[in-house]
Length: 326
Ligand SMILES: *[C@@H]1O[C@H](CO)[C@@H](O)[C@H](O)[C@H]1NC(C)=O
Image (cartoon, rainbow, N blue to C red):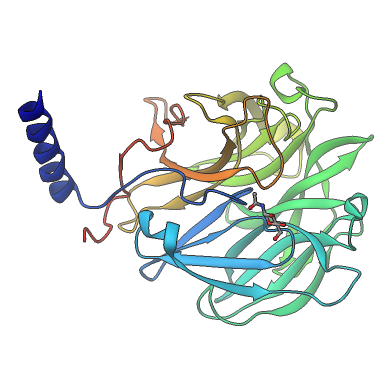
């Protein structure tokens, strides 16, 4: 047994060297909620909801994010928008980085608004406040590219139901008129005390465009991912141009409430990776007890995404293709 174990370990190490870096989840154990990662110029940049400010952690490897260099890039002393800082994302538009996040006054989550920060050449550069988007409750905004134009997708209220909205991007800090994109209509989107659609993010493959989003209340273990697929021809602002599929990524192997995800590409640009949050609490959690985890996206024969199952925490996984292997 001992010999076999040593041999297996040696074999695993040899594979490790051949394939490059490996890693295990979680990448961020506490306050790993609503994660977003971009890979740029040799670094992964990770952001999560920390409630009080906006932090960016960077590392050359996924494993390295666990102890990566962390910078507080934004903290707002204005009491009207200081607090409940949720779901920051950083996007590259017009040759600079922009951060989008929701916030409001302390304790006033019923008045969350989307805000924009204008940055510089790297996600670590200084930011300045560039304004508010939309004069309504709005959270979880992401920039989505559809048919060569940019749109903002975010979570909004329509008919008192937490839904997804979409609006044309005029500039990175201004939007056109929003319209309804999706409402929770299927059973998988209705777990918990109220039905929810939130956390939209773009996914692109072989000319197909998807908006992946989270369904059900974030406190439930049934908080999970589904997607809308663009029909390739219609007006992206119309519900009828999108077809809903779900759920596609749900609780598994001790990970509960697998949702609110982002996508990033491997260092060599060949792979798409899913970064999501989950909790070990079987009854679900929507607070700082959510961790950040990442896993590769595979593709089905028909071109649709295959998110697989969330692997048990601690499982050693091959890192993204093209990572430095030291
Ligand atoms: C998450 O961050 C908040 C705000 O900084 C802090 O109060 C809380 O203790 C953190 N939660 C965990 C589980 O670490």
